[in-house]
Image (cartoon, rainbow, N blue to C red):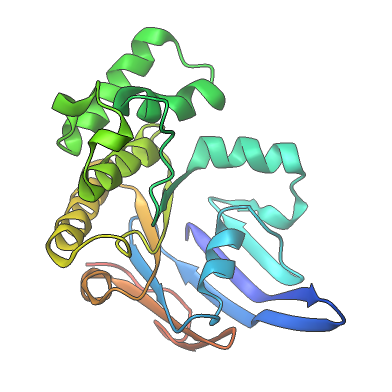
Amino acid sequence: MEIVTFEGVSKTYRMGEVDVAALDHVSLSIPPGAFTAFVGPSGSGKTTTLNLIGCLDRPSEGSVTVAGRAIGSMGRRESAAFRGEHLGFVFQDFNLLPVLTVYENVEYPLLMIRDVPKGQRRGAVEHVLAAVGMEDQADKYPAQLSGGQKQRVAIARALVGKPALVLADEPTANLDGATAQRVVELMKRMRDEFGTTFVFSTHDPRIMDQAEVTFHLQDGRLTEGPAIGKGADHA
């Protein structure tokens, strides 16, 4: 089963008295475990696509299925619970809580969404921090970290709940070239270790070069992809 499927998906936003089509009848599928990139210019529909996959929005037309669930039928609470159980998020500005330590930032999703016992939480947090090479920084605060370190913590936070899918919106945009390359390599290693599907919105050629499935969007339409959105097995 494909982990993400769009069937004839359109998304229209009302801007004043004008309807703006962010997506226009997009159909695509993403296989489990694929390192997947959505690329295109600003305003092409990349972020809207990630928001739909992330159950942060609903389609105006068509259907979106994520991890076997039709997101259009979910209520707000059900969507929040689904995100907590199945999805992780990585943002370009890291979104770490400044008053929490590295350890506490990574632990946070397990406290907020899931009723995970303390010992199990500790094991999960320590495992992902070691996986991203940040176990020796567990007691530091975000202000004490470099950009690359913050993004590694954000990746650990996204993975701590063992989600089926991680959504990353321009995750290397605020990093220098060498750090961005290391972060891309890290995410691919994490995919291989955890079996997580990574889906990116990106302009970064490093991610594009590493992607096994790539979809090109232009003005809300899918212009290029595996059989124009029919999915592709990853190597």
